[in-house]
Image 1 (cartoon, helix red, strand yellow):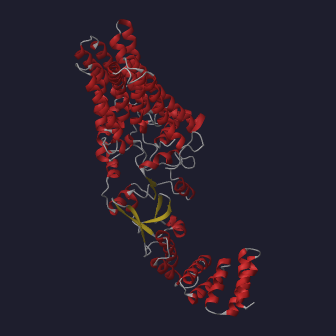
Image 2 (cartoon, helix red, strand yellow; image 1 turned 90 degrees about the vertical axis):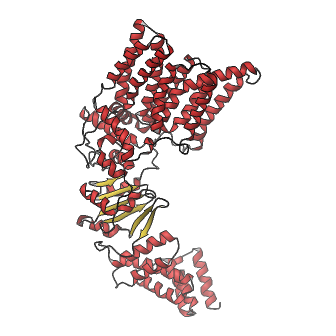
Image 3 (cartoon, helix red, strand yellow; image 1 turned 90 degrees about the horizontal axis):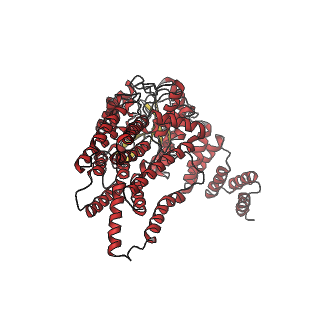
Length: 618
């Protein structure tokens, strides 16, 4: 389970179950706690929370799979009902599944996939029936829309699809336009039979305006580079339809599909919907094409070959990636995208109260068993309607200066910050080191704290001497800070030592800037550095000097390390080698004796005895 939205869905469901009602306000965030929270998927959230309470993430994943299987089983039945062959139906639905695979996640949208197929089935039933049976179908359809609307706001398409079907029936002249029109009116009322009622308009309006305020990948228009499968699928649908529709098309089937097509043109999040609802059209067209080919060339497609081929294709597409990516753990939470080490750090050091977090991380922070809501609120999370347009506009801007960003953080009372995806997240570069201290830098996460008196001990022990610079071409680059910020409580010598550690990590070698930083650290008055740090540093610099043939400098550094309490066997060994290089035979013999005394029965002891014997001419 790698769907980050599920975390806030479970948390919202838990709160609904605990309070026996929808909060109506953005209680989960400290930035806008009184802003209306339009929850259009409350029933999904309650179900997700109940499932998680009983079976963890695996129960939610299994339930999602059941819903998707129901949607595709219903779509297969619909294909067959409309006259498509079994092979053509399976092939069309496999193609639709491939197009929409990224949307098959633990989110309310899966019920819109099931609802869309249910609408097509209802249209067929209303077109083919009359009298009381038609009335029962219409009532069942409206009831289904009520359930759908409480699971996901995607139910708004129901009246549009039914109205288009009514228009299609009118164009086809089949005589069921009135029944479909009345059902469309009933569905229009049914979509408002939810706790948010007319708030649905505001919810949908936000999704129209949000892409201009805060770019989100799933709201972008599809493109060939990003969504080639969708374009290939649509091209296949158009070509097969053009080949088979020699007369005018069946508008009753075509117009409802065009509703989803229009939505998909605007937002790629509807790619799965349009592929699934057009799969019956594709299946029927493929069946006609296959029948024509078989009639013209009877031996071209013997009966078993298409069935075996499609079964093998679907089995390969389904089983192959799972066998290749199996970790042997069964169904579980995928934690690879979660900055768990950074979250543990901020929890351990009490940094959660007024903490900035990225949009992507907020969902898990709400759910986090160690520090989620109600213990802590978040800066932002993926509940888009729970935040005003001005907030989305701020988070959507990529041209802010550090001064503008710091002013915004001051306005929200932010005191700490946890940022993920640090390699490409431009906001990482907006934290002014004069006002914010970098105290955590690990994997793809960064943690900053405001330079406040109560954070001074943490900054003194953890501050990393770095800031960041962002460019669209390279992403974020770590920029070492040679000069200590004026308000940092870190001593100058310690700052330079940490600077040397950082530059060595960045350069991967004892570069001139690393050695210069360490030299500045060691040039400080005695006692500035901790004895253990000074001993480690001087021993390391001694090894570097010894490696480039500067034995005298190395010996002085080893002696300083020993004086500061370094008792490492490597330091004693390097000192003996330095004394040999300086041709101080007596001192070298004594140094090798010290190594032999410490090395015990290890291979190093044998080599030390050999060196000692060589020096004594034995």
